[in-house]
Amino acid sequence: MAKSAELHFEGKVYELPVVEGTEGEKAVDISKLRGQSGLITLDVGFKNTGSTKSAITFLDGEKGILRHRGYTIEELCEKAQFLDVAYLLIYGEYPTPEVSKTFAEKITLHTLVHEDMRKIFDGFPTSAHPMGVLSSLVTSLTAFYPESLDPTTSPEGVNTTIIRLLAKLPTIAAWSYKNEMGHPLNYPKNKLNYVENFLHMMFALRTDDYEINPVVAAAMNKLLILHADHEQNCSAATVRVVGSSQASLYASVSAGINALWGRLHGGANQAVIEMLENIKADGGDVEKYIAKAKDKNDPFRLMGFGHRVYKNFDPRARIIKKSCDDVLESLGIHDETLEIAKKLEEVALKDDYFVSRKLFPNVDFYSGIIYRAIGIPTDMFTVMFALGRLPGWIAQWKEMREEGQAIGRPRQVYVGENERKLNI
Ligand code: CMC
Image 1 (cartoon, rainbow, N blue to C red):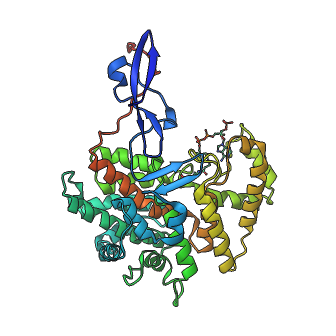
Image 2: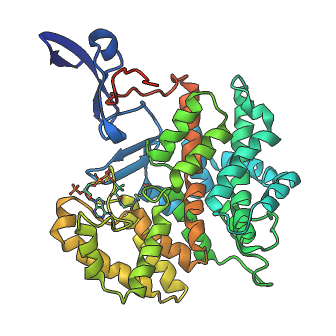
Image 3: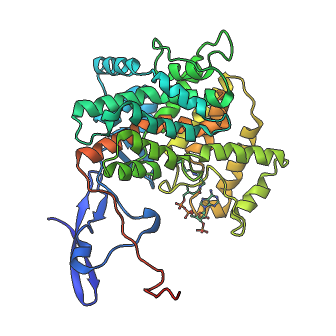
């Protein structure tokens, strides 16, 4: 029997259907509420609001479960290549070896960016943050591929846009780093795989004999998979809302990149390292910073702690913590900030303030430490997150488009002045 919930208001009863997801999640469907009762719902920050049904990613924050198209993040991280996970997210099934090969070949065909885009790079000062460069350049793709703007494009046309974006983002990301360094740009080397090619574009020319370190490539592959999708987070929700106006994939993903940039979302990985460096420079007094984080009159927060949906542990953090130890060990790196991070974690996990609020290290607490160990500069950390999150954004955009979802347009409760006259 179909389930429903009742809302009693001003002597009337409104019956609201309850929808149930495949994992038993229940939601009250209020889509007809305003028409029936004049009421809207208020949920600032969307803490209790489902904005869509989706078949891409399942997340149970209480149990610490994250699955893409049914496969656990643990299994994907252990066995898969990032590009195959991208295929899984975007097209719904894990690719067979033949499909995987064809997909990788298609991507390889599109890794170059138009030479005219180099002129845009030349226009940026070297002080430009690579996230700003990344989002600008992704929007610029609309100028080079204007057909991507047509909302009536065939599925093949949409697919070409998807392949181009997946292929070119590593090139644009690596070039935004080269721009910042004032170094010459490295062109893609298509005999390398997706991850290796990115490392090549980032680091070749820095040393004449640059060779891909397999430990570094494996860690990077894992990091990208860990970030590949996270259901309706701030940037994915942004991509869907922007895309719902029929903006192109490039414009929608560019908006997602900007949403990711903030310190409370993807920018946290950069903020974590900056925080650890500050603590180190300030004498390494971890207790002092724990006290600051607890002080409601102090805006300081422990970066890399807490999560909107994970309330027991972040499964991504568990995987990455292990990776972090492996990478540092195999590269023989002793990182003093890592010692501070470990102390901070130890103290916070026992402190009642953090325990009672269910605040524990999230994925970004460790990702920055690995990025740093493999030579990625701090302000490129969020760009790395964007590279990983790209398939998720594409999958969310594609699902929203294919289902013909209505334009995202929330309501509000107005609390400003009532009508008044201008006395002039
Ligand atoms: N340090 C100190 N106190 C905190 C922290 C923190 N990192 N995070 C939350 N709190 C406190 C907060 O002050 C509040 O306390 P009270 O109930 O006394 O007012 C309580 O915990 C609940 O916090 P909230 O801000 O209502 O929780 P939220 O769900 O709105 O925010 C968050 C989640 C991730 C934005 C927040 O925990 C935070 O700012 N963390 C630091 C930034 C960070 O690491 N972000 C990366 C998230 S993982 C990457 C991703 O998926 O985007």
